[in-house]
Structures are given as C-alpha cells and as structure tokens.
Image 1 (cartoon, rainbow, N blue to C red):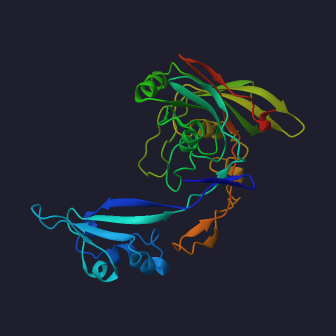
Image 2: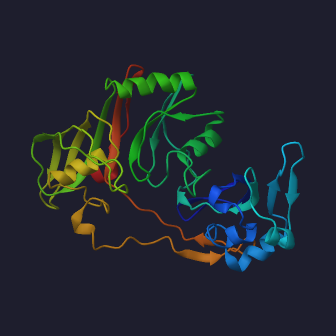
Image 3: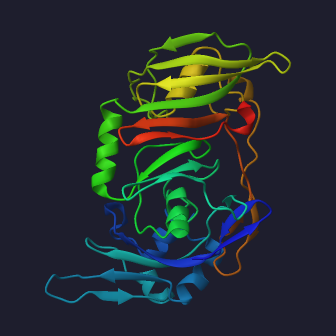
Length: 326
C-alpha cells in the first residue's frame, strides 16, 4: 500500500486484494456469471466482466462431497455453466479504489501516547476505522502506518466529518478498560458545536433519539445532553456551544440541537434549512482501464462539531479549539 498527496488530499494508489465470499442460499442453482451480472453487478461492471474473468481474477471453489477434494473453476466457459451449491465459495481478486480523504502530508496530531493508549486530534473527512470503500484511508490504518503501532482499537465513535479527541487503545485489555468507563458513564465528554442564532446561556434535554433512522421500526432511545453557550457572534449571528452528553447515542448531539431549534449550521442531515441544498456528489472522474470501475473525484464535506475534551481515569485529553469556533 502506498499513500500519495495532491491538492490537499491523501490518496491510496489502487491495489489488488483477494476477497472470498461463501455462497448464499439464493445463489444455489445459479451460475457464477448469473450472480455477477445481477446481484453483484455494482462490484463487477458489465463492460469489464469478461476481461476480469479471462484474466483469472474470479474463481468458484466447490466441494460436491465431503470425502472429495475441493475443485476450482475459472474461465468464462466454466463459470457460465457451473452453479453454486451449499458450501461453494466465490473468490475474486479485486482492484480496489479508495476515495481520497483530506490530507497535506502531515502526520495526524498526537495528543497523548503511552504503552496503553494513543490519543489523537482527528481530522475531518476521514472515517475512524475501515468501512465500506475505505480501508487504508481510515484514521486507524493511517495511524498504524505513521506510528508503526501494530494494532489499534478505537475506544469510541466519531462520525467521519466530526473532528477532535479520538482515543485508541493498543490492546484488547486497554480498550476494555476505557469502554467500561464510557458505558458506566464515568468518562466525561465535551464537544463544541456552532449553530445559527443566539443560543440560551444553558439548557439541557432528555429527548429520546433514533440511533438508526433507516429502520422503520426503530424505537427512540433515552438520551441526555446539557448545553452551555460559549460565545455569541452578533455580527454574523451564530453561537458556539459547549455540548456535554451523558449518554452516547449515535448522532445524539446533532439530533438534540435540532430538537432545541438550533441545528448545527452546516449539518446537511439534521438542519432543515439545508434540506434543499444538494450535496456535491462524489461523481466518477474517469473509468479505470484496468478494472472498469469508476474512480471518484476528490471531495470533502465539513461539520461544525468538535470533540475538544475527554476525561478518563487515565487523564484529561484536550485539543485546541477549531478555527470555526474562535
């Protein structure tokens, strides 16, 4: 894996990795070509499927009887006739393109480090751990590359566009110690947010929040956040607010600020004023000649939400205020 930097973005040079998927019940009786052309069409572009298979990058591994050795099928003719059965494995060598993330060549700022913990000031626009299209362009993998620490365990969550204090543990024992403090609510978290208008001097809410808005039957969960006004800019009519969540629900602060009528200024998901503002999509820049997959344009979104202080038994970890809060 190799990182490069260009015009304010960190990029990962495309690479190959081998991916194995056990056959699903709905694939039984279907040929590999059928499955690749329908359910997995987004992974295997139709205009490049033949050349991918001819290059030997896709194989079906099947053992028809337990007493017999597994048989591998490759090539267009075999994969057009051989069908999935129980226990079959689809193995493919995939040309991976990761979206770029913000980066200027500087290392992620370390707030604290000892033999158990690594605490950093997380930049915006980078997911905490590998997810979806991101693997090496995640905070966890970037830090492993920059610090040569063999393994890191995120102790808590921060959204991709949220910045600030992020605690990693260097062992499963250490991460358990930190997460127990978070679950028992002895850890203290302090955030900064920027909202439009003049915010009250102090206010709190116990409004339940939805942690998964994609599920129709999802039930709101108990949540509590206290808020304090840090300063009000009367020239530009915005407030910087300290947010003190005592529970750790997903998107809790963002939902609570919306509930109070003060959504984060640039929050495209929870600010009603931005509902009609379409996000600039990561449209394809060009099609890769090697794999036929679209390569995304450089793109970076921001969010005025910053985790500026974390208090644990191990210490108090704090960052500078972000520029938008000064």
